[in-house]
Length: 345
Image 1 (cartoon, one colour):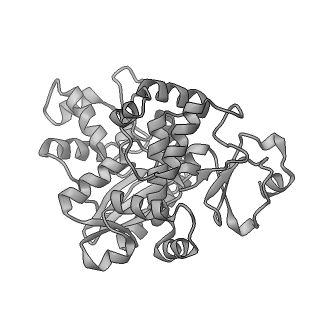
Image 2 (cartoon, helix red, strand yellow):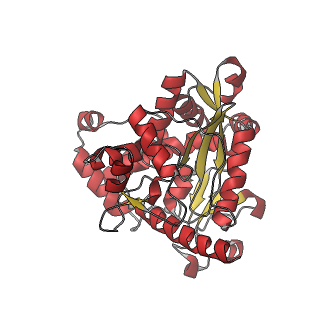
Image 3 (cartoon, rainbow, N blue to C red):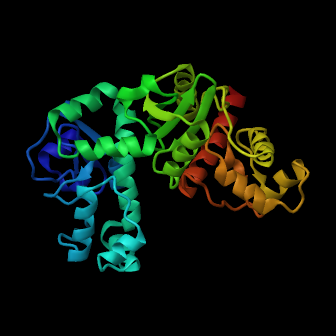
């Protein structure tokens, strides 16, 4: 990929995107800008992944755009987000600017393949998650270097996680770790009691889950490590390699008694197998509660460890999954194949 970047190989257009660590910008592989050193480059499978990695799109090669010049409205909206990525821009704010929210949504979707709010969320969360990914020393180095996204980065971190890393010793904290997997990066949050959250970083609603945990526990979230985060990283590696499909990490579940009963049933589903919502309802003694089972599934914030991806419709078809139906399909197939391989070994 680096050779393709240096030679501006057009056959790799759309295959990967390049994040440049020294500038905080991501580009197409054919970008005409001066090429960075190999150690200052990382690669992403999609523009969305690059945004959640904390990078902003390059103004020279326009990696988000299908056409070179999007409408003036789209350029205006993106400029607003890039200038103030940590500000929440709601529908009422758009209307105050003379912009129809539905028009903003449609035009962003057309030219960038994502809605305006999806782009805004990705930029805000990407800046915040960058701190988790790289840890305190890199954050301080970024601030000291005076990158133009530094103030937005710091504010985004504070608003999402509740406290900058430098204040970790002054408040109760959940430690956060950025974990790479074959299906995309995941965010793990844990304290001395166990793992509180494990989600794919592009999950819609992740920010709300973090804010809810902060409110319940009256704590901040900061980059760091503890034995539970180290354990889940090892167990995820084994899971994706197919050498072990069970998780033994200690977990802390936040929910009602009903939700706990549902999650316990999910954990009882063996890898490689599935259950329907109706079956889960029968197992917990709540016939006719299939919809409530679905809501409890959606409130699970321990992806893979509490395997809500193993729940399907009664007719055997796949249904919604917080990490995306494509991930659900991949996980079920991976578990079936790995189970057969482990049994025959």
